[in-house]
Image (cartoon, rainbow, N blue to C red; front, side, top):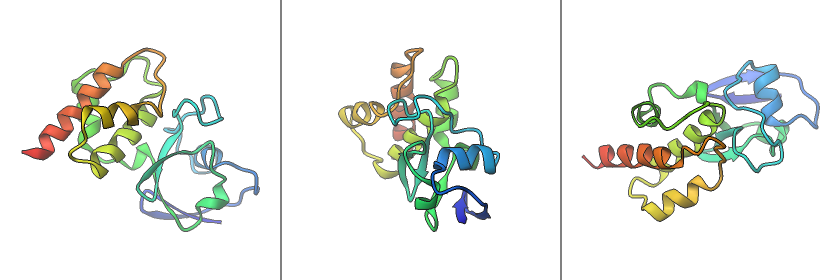
Length: 148
């Protein structure tokens, strides 16, 4: 099976029942997407598929053939990464890659996102350490930077 991950074509063998999360972590060595609930609730496994944030635990890897998959490892100096650091938008860090991918997709797709839109997008991920305000501030700082 061929996957396009972070702009590179990768080939692997997997079972029809393997999730994208499993293939990314176990076959490709890309461990940024984290297993959490493994039923789509927590968002720790969020990656971007064809420019839309998706929970990789819900996708079968075979469904992703030919699609553009971006992982946290593929982000190179994205402004949202710097903003997370500057705004202290993480605590334990387990959920951080999933949040960064979700937030990166948000700021790319909606450079004029309102507070309500930001809050709606943040509902797709869970942080048990409660860094939501800092995450929102990180997004707002990137959006403000894009306006200038």
